[in-house]
Length: 296
Ligand code: CAA
Image (tube, rainbow, N blue to C red; front, side, top):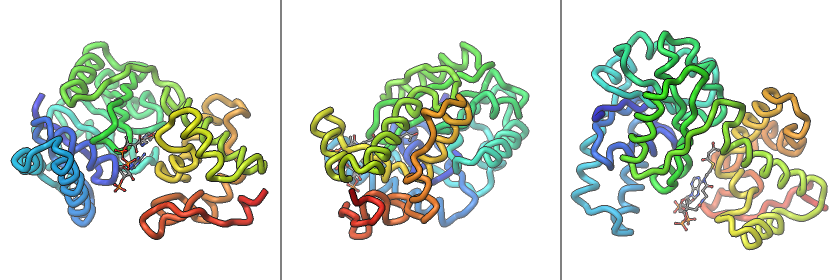
């Protein structure tokens, strides 16, 4: 397999395109807006510069990586001749179902269709195609060029052959693939999101402040960053959406999102992307937010 298409040039899509291109694949990067593609390529270039500065890549390898990426605003054009499509569009179920219906028409029947969804059912996405055995989850972690894990999610009908192909392909990207089954939150978010939710409850109930909670988990459990800071990176709206998937999917009150999280998302405080979450990000670094909601 040498030719892949990546749908979506946002944070996850440009990271996935970067990694495939870095390891010699020809990548067609697709987005509906040329401006999004330009932004995606600018981010890839910045992240390649970071790898050159850290002596992970040479200037020549940076050039080759960028040379492996071609951009498209038409999905039909961009998926022509590829052997694999990795969809990394916005996390919206209706949008993903529409994209997979189209992909099923635009690509030859042997093409594998993967999705980077963090919580939408692979089985549900596969069901809108005529090739459910060739639909699979490839859940990359942010920041994609750095994080080693790819969670490989088998839908109800995903074949062994397709799973093995995608496991091997992930290894060719120098990632560590882990095979899991398709149940709400898969493994990564089934464990991560309740921890983040519990950190928010701990804040909400006045047990401790933002920095205290993050410091306990950072220094006490050797996490690279505290759960509240990580929630700001992931996006509080994304955390809320995933908790709702867990809550609805299992029907268990233990997954109910903390009311503080719901309030913050309703107020537009979505973390780094909106400039404020548990921390303020407006100066490019994290500052503490003094909010009535956080007072003990
Ligand atoms: N998302 C986006 N960017 C991140 C990030 C994250 N989760 N974690 C770190 N970064 C960025 C930092 O902002 C920083 O960017 P700038 O240099 O532009 O400021 C850059 O990565 C380097 O970060 P560090 O200074 O911490 O550098 P480091 O080399 O010491 O560590 C790291 C890098 C290994 C990525 C470390 O920061 C880390 O482990 N972060 C946590 C990563 C993580 O938990 N990712 C999983 C998120 S969950 C997910 O992706 C799946 C989902 O479905 C929700």
